[in-house]
Length: 117
Image (cartoon, rainbow, N blue to C red; front, top):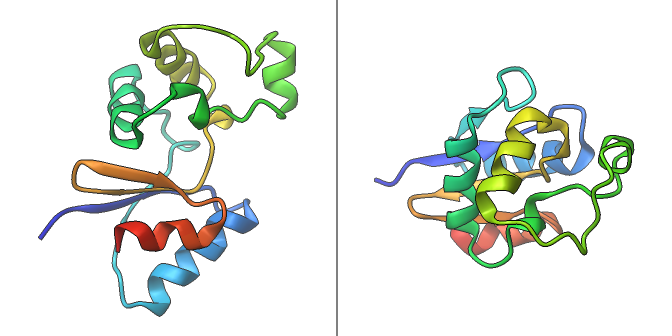
């Protein structure tokens, strides 16, 4: 069976909804506490690869910290730079993110997680 992993922030209502959705379906997932233990740039870049598409989809640009760092959704950077930035500032990682095997999806709206279940 493929590993199921959720990048979870217990203070985020959408992240808590995602955990309830998984529990309601009897799904057990490994919880990634990315705020308690910051991920490495390699882990973030691997997650970006599983999401596919633009690495900026993983960045919370509306956070005060993003503005303080001068980040914008218009910024053109290689995925490795975004990954290093998010590893250094994990609060900027969008959540929740569900990983199943070699695929991942951001749970906004929460029902998007069902795409991988």
